Amino acid sequence: MQRPSADATREQILAAAIDLFSERSFEGASTRLIAERAGVQQPLLTYHFGNKVELWRTAVGQLFEVLARSVAERVAGLRGVEDETVAKLVVADFVRFSAAHPQLHRIIMQECKSEGDRLGWLVEQHIRPLYEGAVALLEPLVAAGKVRDLPAAHLYYLLTGAAATIFVLAPECRLLTGVDPLDPSEVERHVDAVISMLFES
Image (tube, rainbow, N blue to C red; front, side, top):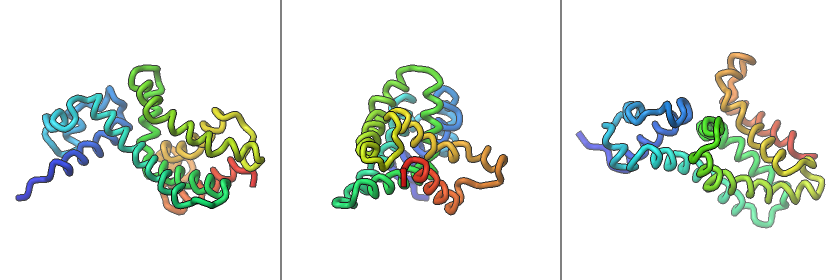
């Protein structure tokens, strides 16, 4: 029987950690539960990540890296395209990312229950660059009358809240409305809804 590679084991642990940190919070996701979910022995978590905080940081960082890479690739492929079109495509990609990775928004919500070291790290390492990028993308369009005329903070939270909430609360949405927001056609409908909410035309 072939043993899984160290890289494959590491990815299994990260996938399990992302799910459990989003479901149970940092405190509720024990290393024992993460190891069980990953199908590995608990000492392997220490071997690959050192401690639970580093595992959490690596798991969160992996999700933000996927998002940052997606945005960078989209923007790089749109050189010469008008700013409004670029912004709409980036927003659409962010909605799709939020549908594919609702765990990230759940983890952020878990950490925002109180101010602490993990939240401070999260803001400085990952959320602030996201915020600054969103402001740089949208504020010139506000000035040009293409995006709703709102203060930067409100615009950012409208974007992130509108993009993610329906997917974060997918079980509620299914029970409440009978709509599965993770159905690909519903994801695209939500893309259109968020763009319509933010842009003037």
